[in-house]
Image (cartoon, rainbow, N blue to C red):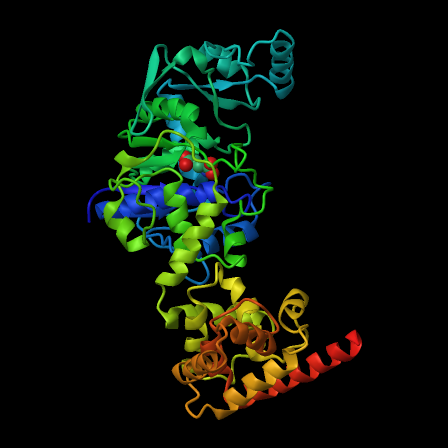
Length: 493
Ligand code: GLU
């Protein structure tokens, strides 16, 4: 194993957002492509916003995508894994405190006794004067005697931002320079002893020996603070890579209120995790092979490099996602597709238990080239599981209104009845013979049959579905259709 150690550090205050999935994927692929370690650390210090249900939803999202962590917290009965735990930030509070107090001892941080009211008044003044709100530095230079004189008064711990410049050497953004004057002395420990995000994240990254911090560029300004803290705490500096956020189709930040912001929405809509992985990687990474867009997870594990991460944000493109989903559905073996569509059918109340695995595989196979999502299996195959209760009106008008419609259907039924070899090829041969005998196109027989057997004008190939439906059932459905056409004729006359 290489020494590469990278992590995803989500705050479980919501579901697994597509942007977080993107960050996780980049970290995970980087770990996999370098033989390193991928760590899941839950940044659950904000007790008010953290919810156990979100922890579950997030981990479930990672699992669904196939992003497995090498080190991380206990989940779904699996124990915590890794030698650098605990992997829940809330359980590392003592360490954060200890490190903050060390900074205090070393004079790299100081106690601030300003009350909330004072800070708020300062903030208001800044807003009125249209200045960015900053801490005045009032307690920065208190003498030891002045501090001692404060007695038991509550205090926060502030980081003493050094003078000069901080440079974040970013693998994606290049060198990003910050004049330290842009930062005020920020709080690292609250009055109640809880760490502030900046401290917690740096202490944890330091102690977990993280070598690469790959995350969204909304953290780029924070990275300046983090670099200062890394130096102050004496930890080796990890490499940073800040990648752009995911934008929606309108080019705005992908709001968590939008359907699809939650990765599991796509699962519910019948998309494959393979598709999402492939799609998400394209939101910020390009292959060396120009124009190539289709990738499997296995391929990505070998192809992924940080160097090819893009600096510019990609817009969500639903059409591309749909196209990829079709591609990935076609890539599955029919058995794998069967195993994915059977639960969808069962969820819709269709009982598959009476069908053999072979039959179900063939059912999946005849839809494989056609369905855009797993959920489409329902409309492509429901007629196998229930009688045809209605016929599509447009197709009825097209195929069954002509005066000779019933005769045509009788002719087809007769042809069907005479088929001795009830297989795709046997049925097809009979229909082709019919076209030769009548001089009419195949469509003139195929479309009305499809309507009789399925009630619809689109679906799997007719000969395949007829074979699977069985001869007796096909004849029954033809009889029903002929009776229906008869009733149509009566209505018309
Ligand atoms: N917990 C932070 C977030 O969810 C991530 C911090 C980091 O990756 O450094 O945005």
